[in-house]
Length: 299
Image (cartoon, rainbow, N blue to C red):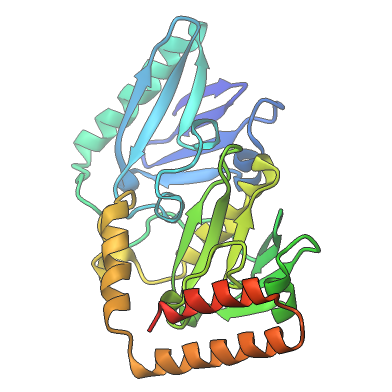
């Protein structure tokens, strides 16, 4: 057993699994404490390194592409302190950190673990049910359905449509961008219907606009990961690496270029809903015009 215990957390390697446990100190980000212990099978590991610094060092683990739904859902955008595969190491424990890293590297060589992308998730993601209260509302996932209950501060367009319930079978993917504190983030549930009627996150009834507490809004990645873990693996859809935004945009553009007839029907229904909200005075003329224009871009 190779083990290092730090205020930031604990890494323990038994030859087949790296067990990562977050520390309980207040300096450990809320996301890591909530995400909890992560058991990383050796076959999911691409590499590990200890990066020494003057006062402290860092243990970093790199996973194989496609092995972890968390990394796929967040696209490499998790803030560094919230990364569960990173451990801050005190300078007097640098030797222990080097030993742990070397033991993992040695096991990777002995077991001849490939570095190629995986064709299935090797980590399960967070357990369900999972529920997170964000600045735009509360999002919950029970393993089969996503439910969004809007906050009082949500846009009137969203509150007028009521709670949003989405079957996991209707989902194509989850898009997630963290709230940085300088720029708003969002979490959008892309369905076969909604993928052709993109609205701004603040008005999209399939998206949460993340603009409040960066610490709490980051927890929406738990839901994004839990849903992603239950969608088809990216290898079955021909997705590129989890951080490839250009490939992601290209896929959405190609899909929008030739939407099937049933999606046009869905867009027509959406236009009728907007018309009713406008007639009832829920939407102002300006809100109606902007939202209608965004929906029409889907045709």
